[in-house]
Length: 435
Image (cartoon, rainbow, N blue to C red; front, side, top):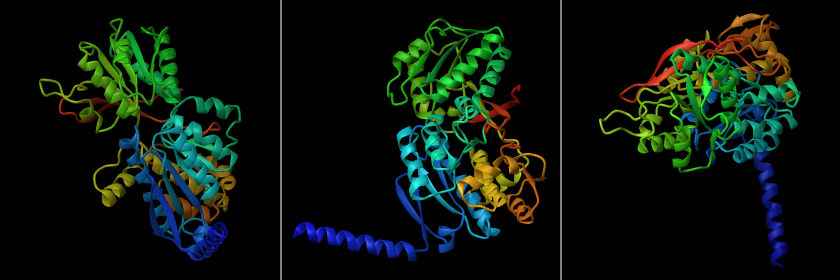
């Protein structure tokens, strides 16, 4: 009798939930395991464009991911304020991927099969995008990453693995690796050791750097015995010792913020960093990381003087995006926020161009709205207006021109940055990769 009552109760609950969902005008936004409700018209949930974001607001890349995640709703609010897409408001479902491939795969599955989004902005970590992109492609969901730089995606796209449901608004490390190699040679570092996070991002960057550095006449000290650390590691004494062995001129670290900070702190505490230049990449360019590594006895930050590269932003829409960010959030947008804005912009523009709010429709128009020919537009609302009038556009983004090629790649510009004695990060140069 208890089992019958439980089953009956469950059935009634399910039925009631169905009625509530049919009548409800609320869209749930999930972020970091929390659900936030925002009111949207019922029609936007049934016929309007629905997109998702899959970005790290917790985990190893949270300090950068939170800025990226904030850019997407800013774009959606802007678009909805000027009439939405295909006559309906855009709905956003945000998921925290926790900088973890398993969480990212679960989040992508939810977005594709439960929320039934047409496109997703994500992810940041290449390892998470690797876990998510096959799920996206299988479910005809367009995935645009604002930060995954592994060259592996180019190789897989060339093989047709993604069926056109993949793109990114950040250039691959097949460009950044050579750019950093050129910077090392320019600075006079002829013998370099590498230490990288053992995932698609770290290993892919390492490969691109080593090939370029050797072509330029440099020597990779530990090429035959590369140092690669577990992304889940919490202690790094052994890896730090191995990376700084052999008296290199410089050590290239391809890290994420939390684990990379621990490794650099360990290297300093062991007295390994004296007289050795540390070079870093985009995964470490966070305002928080100098304090995470700590200060030396003289009061200077341990990582003072490190240099690195990061995909920069030099797009025609950057000034307007920065002003909007300042007016809505205060301060300046963080790293990769312009790339996240552009990824979301491409999704909505493509849907309008296709006159179709499905993933198939969106994927069919990504290259069309991002490349010439067409009227150059920097304002998303202007682009939507022209598309509604049946005109072609060429979107010029905040991060760059975002000319997406057949493999879903773009070519960008890189900022060269350093850490000052006061722990502040400063961009000191720009470099454009050779194609």
